[in-house]
Image (cartoon, rainbow, N blue to C red; front, side, top):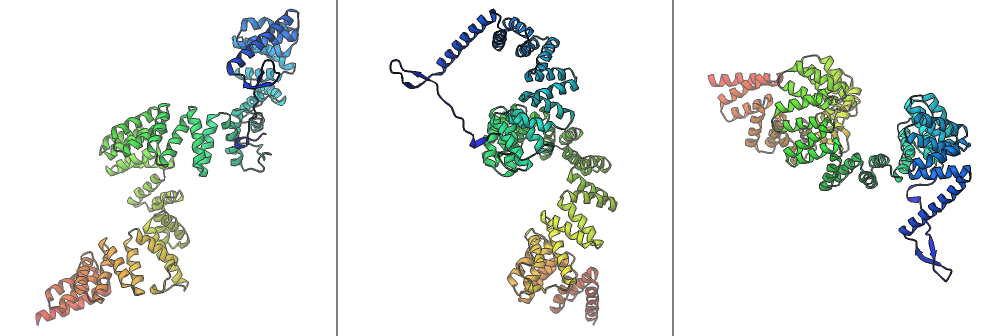
Length: 616
């Protein structure tokens, strides 16, 4: 097969006229009008010669004259010449007579002449006869004649045979698509590329011009061949392959080529490339073209663009256009638009419309609305429908629904299903159960998945698990000795950076252990201000050690009011030291209530001593 793409070169020669008198070639090429006039004159001379020979009884001339008139569209003039030549045994005339009769609607008579020509060895007639039988539903006869044509080297016959075999699901389609493609049939090249890409080409092999290729690489080359010949769907597919590979610039060129030829999906894809490049205006223009040609995806993209700009009426109009184009995403997007505007009633109506059409995320959104309304029994079937259709969020929501009912086993099964599809929160829920049941290896795997997906709670639990595993193996380090590249430290740091309060407290403890009071205070303060009672208590301890007892008392009070028993005991001791015995007794009572046991015991003893002091 010849090289295509940038390596192809078209060698052209100009036709020259001679200047009068000097016998040398002029450098002025013949213009288009002169060329057309010359061609018409040449054809007139040829027709005249054929007509004289045909009148003299020359069969070949009759056949040639009939073919010339047939190409011109003069069926009445062509038919008698073709009949005469065909009756004399000229197979080309028999084939062309079949074409003429087929154009006039005499399919059966056309088939008879095609058979005569095909039996005589005409590959073109065998192709036409095969197509004739296929149109009548006689596939065995169609295959026989198309195979005769294909095996005789007829490009159209090879393509038609491949099309028939692929339609029936028979083997061998790829071989004949390849044969036709190698002879320049662009649709065959496109279909072969699709077959190779889908893994259905049983005759996949290396292409000599390119060496050993993978399936995707060979598919790309056939897409290139078809696209270079103006096949717009091939240009679209080639653009998609290049975009997936990251070659956005070349992908855009092929999308543009296909879009200019009227391929709406290419115009839509080009719009997304332009949007990603920051050119929203050009993107909108291509989406508008595609949407006007009936591309629902482009209409949805335009709707989203206007929604982001706050132009909600325009956005809804484009979403409706998407729905009119058969894209059910339009209904779902109108539902989202209504929900964002606080029109839950209308939103539910659109979610239902999309959900009944099989839109899984609309089914999930509808179920959430029903659940928020307190209709759990109405929500569950929609969650199930969405989950069975592949909605990961719906599977997770089913887990939440069953967990709320106390059906832990069923909830866990749904969490596992969502986790297997990469749902971060579901992976965390699965890990929590596995930690509780001692399945530490599986728990670590799920925690890594959830932490990698951005869950701060998973990052904290993973760090804690790694710490416990290191301690159990005798490899644990003291808090002040941890290097910065310690894996558990890295996970604690990631969780703390995402605002996880327990991780912030833990990082504060590490800083305090290595003597970095400033960092420790910052970590504790961040946790305390976010509501961590341990952070507030530890910050109080740090401040007290630094001599800032009044500020420490403020943080202990915040911790105690949040339920921290040790902070309440500290406040009781402070009050007792300054002689506020009633206040000290109150904080002792709070510490006894909050615990833990050793704190409650100390607080009880202190309260008794204070009572004795007050009674003295």
